[in-house]
Structures are given as structure tokens and as C-alpha cells.
Image: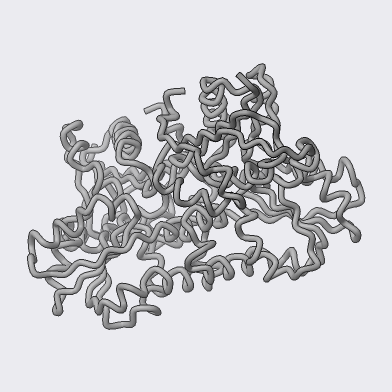
Length: 265
Length: 265
């Protein structure tokens, strides 16, 4: 048995992290869990987020994973410390790499962060940025409608709704002259075209999945790991939607998508 | 002790039902529970919806209610039968009155229904309409983004996002020449201005709360019942938001909003 990587998210968003790692991570098998029944996590309170995340980790452990990536910024920002304490398996969050990359990228020191309400309330991004770059000015904006927009397909149909939502949420960041924007939720890379449309090409967008790959999974590999997907609701929908998130569909050609009852874990 | 009415919904939406009843329902006390921690119910599977609804009913019973209105179309369409079987207290759904009113209202027989995914999948509206009016043509449209739009305040700020979402979801119904539209989710009356903007003034909008009042609570009363609100998350936000839903704020002037842990029920 080779090494097995576990990845989880509240829904589809974590697939952007998986996508960034494919071709770079040397695992024989990857187990992905998307909690499509309880998405979005970002509007929940901290205790609920921790409770859900623990179930997600226990499920992945039951599938024999050796390492777990928390491909959800809401869980990383609200519960990563507690998860690391509660479990022995290595648990990797997705915020640090993105913050480091943003601090290297900014020239004018004005960094924007967009994320779920729970991530923004945790203040983790701002604290982490100012630890590395005390002079940076951080402009936070919670964008609670973005996850529903993406989960309900407004990146591919009815795109004008996503454009309007981006204009609404990003206008303050634009006025504050940010030169770097952390997409602080793994769903958000799917809205890149709309975000660029509002902010212009000159604002550098930091994708947490890409930043994690660049920091921790640098070796290219031609290995095609077996990928087992599990979801807690609507496996058919997940099967259709996931191809939008994965750039090279060769990787998911032989994968399976199964339904589980996450409350049992 | 006078009569106590219980009302519950997944979040804020049920307040439109409460609003319709105020001034008509002769109760001494009303207990409202909004499951703001687990909103939206409409994307969940049937078993989860039933489980959540049972907890909601048990909570209201613990507050001594004599009668319960399920001010949530998702619960009514997916779980009302099971709830009536499981509990002895009278439990009132919100679909029948709206369907009867729509069947009386239509002239050309083309009735539109907009609701959550779970309500539309249950097919309850279509079946109930065709039982009364077998010749009616029913055009269903699930509008999963509407509840997040309303819960995140896009009825009052960033309204252009709501307009675009209405245009997107309602275009097929418009083309199908409906003359009556059931707003099949208690949240949706908050989007009336945007819906009218797309469909025009000639399409009759059926508000489930108003239909329930007209059918079951016809006697006007000047009594101001005491209203106790309970929510499972963000009571401060609920306190601010609820005034948008209640036309006569005199009714909620002396009410209280308390936070509870619904999983305990």
C-alpha cells in the first residue's frame, strides 16, 4: 500500500486545491470528501464548524489516509489548532502558504482578503499577514453569497449574476487601491474571470491551492493516483460539476463518487 | 394562561408568515423559532429536513405552544405528513391555502411555482394544483439562490444582484405566459419588487402567508400578543433584520430574541 492523501471541504471548493496538486503530489491514492449536504460552512458558528470538521477527519481516517489537507479556509481559520490537537495524523491548513505568497507579491502594501463570514471574523488572515509584514494594510471583505453562487452553478450559467455580485462585494477593495488579493476560500478561484473584470489585470490574485502546491508539493510527477470522491448529498450533481474544477480530466477519468452519511462519523 | 401559537422556519423567511397573521390571530403569546444556524433547509435531503423539523417542533413544544405553523415550504412539502404522525399537537402547513388561492386566481390556467430545490423535487405543488384544477399547466422553477440572497441582505443593499438573479430564474416562466405565480417559499415575498419588475404587474403573486391568513385566520383583532423569538445563530443580526419583515413594528416592540442550541432538542 502506497501513501494515501486525504482532502476535505464543505463542498466543491476543495476541488480547486486538488486541481492545483494534481501532477505534483506523489500519492498512490487520494480520498476527497465534500460535505455537500452541509455546505456552506462559512455561515456557521465556530463550535459547529469544529464539530463538522472532526467528523470529516474521522471519515477520512476510516479510509486509511496518511495525511490530511483541510481544503476549506473556514475550517482552517476556525478549527485547525483544535484539529491538530485532537488527531495524530498530519493535518495541513491552507492559509499560511497563501499569506506568505501575498506578502511577497505586494508592492504597495495594500492587501485585500475576501473569504466567508466565519473566516473574516476569525481575523486569521490579517493577523498572519501583519506577523510577516507589519506595515501591510489589510482590507477584509466577507462575501457570503460567493459560495452559493458557485455551488448553484452561476459560474457557467447566469454569469451576469456573478458579475453583479463581484461588483458589489469588491468595490471597497478597489477604492482602497489593493495590489494583491487573497482568494481566501477554496471556492473563489471559480470566480476569477468576474473578479478580474472588476479589479483589472494588475491586481495579483492569490489562489490558496496554488500557493500550497508551490510551498509544499513542488516535485512534478506523471503518476495518476486513484481518486475516490465521497460526498454527503447529490453524488450525481457532484460528478457533473467536478469536471469544471479539474483542468486535466484525465486525472478523474477512472475516479468514483460515492454517497456517505457523514453524521455517522 | 391563554393560547400560545408556535411558528418555525429555517431562518428569517417564516417572518413573512408571522407578518401576515399579526392583527388576525387571537393568541396571547407567539413563539417563533428561526433555525438561522442551519439555513437553508432547501438544499438538504429529505431525511435531514425531517430530522431538523422534528427538533424544531420539540423545541416549540418545550415552550408550551398549543398549535404549530410550519412556516417553511421545504418542511411542509417534504415532511408535513411525518410530523403530523409523530406529534399530537395540531401542525399546520402552508402549501394548501396557497394552492387553493392560485387555482381560484388563474384565468389562462398557466400557474408558475418558484421554490427551493427540495420543494420543487417533492412535486407537491404540482400534484396539489392538478388535484383541484386538472387542466392547469404548472411551470416549476427551483430558485436556490433566492434564500441566500435574502438571508445575506440583498433585498436592501446590492439590490442589482437580486434583480439579475430574478431575470435569470424567471425568464422561462415569463415565456410560458403564466398569469399566476406561487411564491412557494416563505422567504420570497421579500423579493416581490424584483419579481414584479421581471414578470410585470399582470402576473398575480401568491404569498403563502397571506393565503394562510385568508383561509384560517380571518378575524381581525387588536390584541398585541407577546412574541418570543428564538434563533440558533446570530441573534443580533436577527434582531436587526426582522424589522424588515414585519410591516407594523408595534407588534415586535416588546419582543425578545434569544439564542438556543437546537441540536439539544
